[in-house]
Figure (cartoon, rainbow, N blue to C red):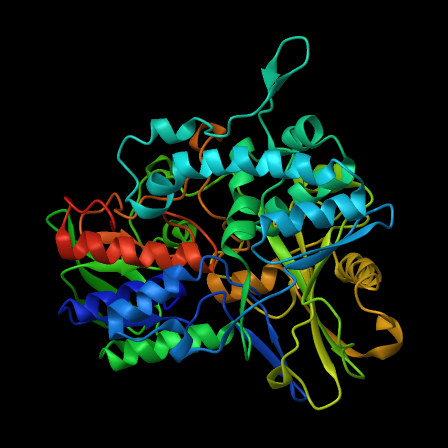
Length: 508
């Protein structure tokens, strides 16, 4: 197995339970992929996902690999309220967790009568899109002919003289919600997964539906604790890990994978190879052979965004009624989309501020806060793309220089003050992480999102069965895409394909 990300580990434990001998080779010195932790001076921060949606995926994993509930393996709590939104005009609304009636009431109270009804009607259409696409996008292997998934399942309302339905999520917001604050609320769900609302298909409506239907959850000790629990389950099932061991190639004989080649010159035989590393990195670094880039499998190539995350160590305790998550919306949503499309940093991004009430993450009497913005993962114009490059100088290869990155982070922190009273006066220190850090740790600057139907199929990840017989793709760059829940589903699909063969059609 190549890589010890969440999807790969999910596959590893399931395969071990099915009787396979599994060994995982990971070039980094730790497991978990993008689910990492930064620690300093007694403060701890999640540098990957900060919340879990669809916890049923990991409940299934722990039951199927050890007959134990997820809640016995981690301290899982529901986040309530689900979040607070601060809009450009200063209006704020706090939304309850997994309560449609509560959300409708809160929106009516904050944004005016009728706002909640329009949002509720939108969610009905989003549920229709979810019902149409849930099984092929989440529960079944990607079919060889995925043309039907290239069509958008969202039943957009037809408006205007030409009666043309909305084709993008931004158009859905403008036409169907008819309030810039509701539109911003809708668009923030796409941004959180790395999608530009101006180009994301209308089917991205399933993202707010998923969250508001199944809720938002947090693991005490940080989301890294979930990666720890999955790793421990793998060890309990006798999965072997070789950390700090890079795979440089897949050995192929008679047209089929028979093992892997290691950076130290060694080799390892295998009946099956599961590649959990980013699909584009596997081909860029020639871990998998190719003669022309046309041979690369489709891998959500339309995604060109990454994340800037700022870890803030704050003096003094969090106020008792602080929201766990606050989204502070950009006053210039069009400018934010234009910057994402142009590969530059915008003047004022939408930021997600996470303030977990978790004593395990901070010294007594202080607070650990993360602030995240979605940005273009593109390198500055003219900069080289070094194969396998790493290093701790993100400004040298991303963002156009240290001063520009620092100014952008200052703007993120200024926006976060709407969520954290007295932030500037309370700041002890901050740590900044850019797409270059993501590249150093995972092999890709982009952060993949979940699979979405529509958009001509451009937002479908790589199929779990690779073009090379005997090689399978697991993790965020493969079906059904990025995010904690989707990566877990990917691992389950790969395990099913290996154990049951090509006839496997997903869980029932």
